Length: 182
Image 1 (cartoon, one colour):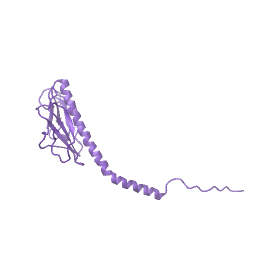
Image 2: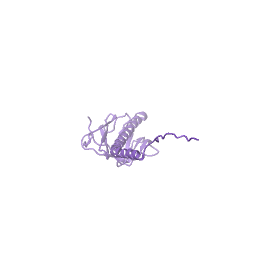
Image 3: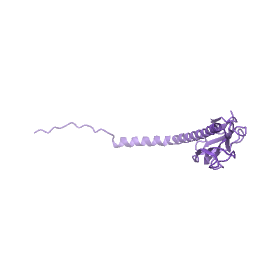
Image 4: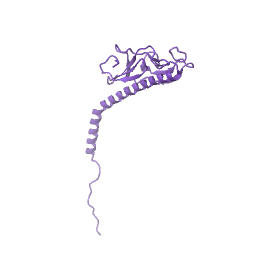
């Protein structure tokens, strides 16, 4: 009787050395790219927060026009924008939110710890609140702004509200200390 001998075939797959080299290359690439991913995430958080505040401002203006009453975007804790904000229709015109009397439209919780809201010097005055009159114009008759900054990347976004009530986001230079109306 004859035993059939099959030719040996090389096993398919990776050798241990090939696998270790691949893992080492992936580790080096991950180490090099991790800081840029962190910066990307920080800049995206800054952009999202700026957009949320812009949306709150546009909502307040729309509510003022819709209800023919003043509407306000104010800091939730009263001392800092980083604590969050709220949009409310000020039914009793006392410039502060009162549960049961005023209509709360939007509440934003505290901001990401990497985002700060800075007072500006010169340029457009920083806002403690944005109050829209029933006609949609900004109360006080002057432009107001808020500057948000990423503490991780140093990037900044200014939200400028003109006296007509229209709000916009600008990207000032990282070295800027104020929002300008240009």
